[in-house]
Length: 596
Ligand code: SF4
Image (cartoon, rainbow, N blue to C red; front, side, top):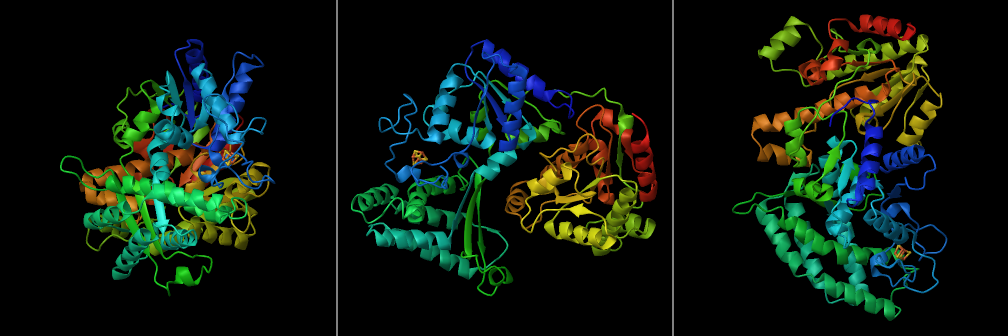
């Protein structure tokens, strides 16, 4: 279901979850893209329950959010603990809830998981992250058979992206040689087989060094699978346990070493499985793809980062994540989003063929404006001389393009922020890269405009918190950080400036895979859809309720290519691309100074 921000999707999710829970038809899951949103959703559930104990919902997070009790001092979390290799008294049996050792303090992670699992079976809504849901409903005993009566997914447009980010397996030469060193240390028989794989990888990388991720050919994948099948992960596990019992490994002191060995025990079978899905079969095409990066010794990135210890990176990415998403969501689910856009593309991305409903809004479109200035630059590569685009953009409009287009865009952002600052109007500037973020920050500093950005010890989240608390007039961030999941309602940032659409670079591994796999038309349809969704997400940051007033100024002329057509009908009245930037600023000041 696509419905605008502030139209009550969260209340609907809560009402649906409680209704399904009351029907006692089975487990009810509420899936959020991030941990922060899980916390916010749990707070809303509590608010709605208003102290009624029959209305409860339980959160469950990933391992990194729980302390590991095996390591005293509270400094190690369950994710960093080599838990799988340890004989731990705190471990909580998932069926009985008993600790391994009678009277031991229960492991916080396994305790929370046990409670969530029991509560899920009683129909209590469980609120969790998409990552937790995908990993557990796919691979973990008990959870795999949960069969939810209803799954509610918030921000449903993010599902495919999250699954792809989650199912990436990376190994590096540094990591491999560390494992080999540890295996030698415990006298494991598996050292040679792993060394053969590592040597092949190094040889392969040296033959075609490339600091840009490069897709590997099928024959390379076949070779890697064959080499890795010679490594017996079960034997490594047995050798490690033997070493612990013999005192050759101290689980407390040698935690890092143990974690390295755990990564071999668990990672190698997983690696072989993911690699085998990267092969085209006779009937089915590859579901995953494999890319490698190799940095030469004198590469500036290696020279400038003395802490970088790896030079070869091998990554296996899941691409066709439809089966993962379908298994996670089950048969009955309600997906919610403010930005699905083209439902057909979303269906292809997520692998979910569902009934799709789009809802409008009864908000006053006069409260918001969406501007593409008529004098905005063309921030893409300069069109080739003589082409139709060249004639219309360069010769016809005299528009600045390429590097000078980018320079003009920065200048426009600078002067616009200055004008707004003079009027006491706060601005969120969203750019496409860290390089641009720094360039805009430099211009703010030069103009003496109080600004905030992250870096130098400030996280993106901290910068948002400080801005929301009233610090600075301008907040600058990339769309990777600020296009989603941050809200600036009630005048916190009534103006958003979005510099340019972010297309994946051709060196991006997923872009390489898609350009090989799809026709040019499908390829561009996908790229444009992602850019459109992001552009709409950026716009939604400052309008969170029907009383909010907010403006979004899209600087790059190229937004004209898709922005209007991807706006929902009810927002199209707010769109304007015939005014110059100065006129857009005048209109904005006028709108924001009017009484609601
Ligand atoms: S079961 Fe033990 S080792 Fe594993 S995370 Fe819990 S406390 Fe740590």
